[in-house]
Image (tube, rainbow, N blue to C red):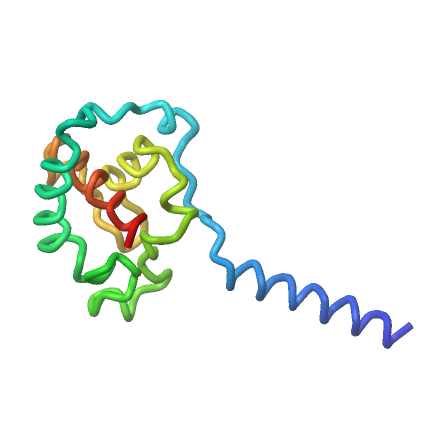
Length: 134
């Protein structure tokens, strides 16, 4: 009986470690955020992403890192760590969800809504999308 309890306890610990290792997204945007539509049309997304890159480099890179992998110098002491923006769990979110997260922030991530214009926040979303192919 004692041996079975140890096996069960070990399995629970293992599953807990594995779910943490595979980084599930614990920061969910509200359901309505999925429906926010990116107002920048496809023909202008490249120019928007270029503007977003400049914003990212001055505002986000310190924590999220140059390649968006969450390994920036400023993020090393943060808990939780800055998100790796290249992961499929980030890239699979809708533009609206990313926009909502950038706008509202959480924990140590700044609430960018009062600081960046709406267009600038969409530019950052479009730049974050470029990490999908890197």
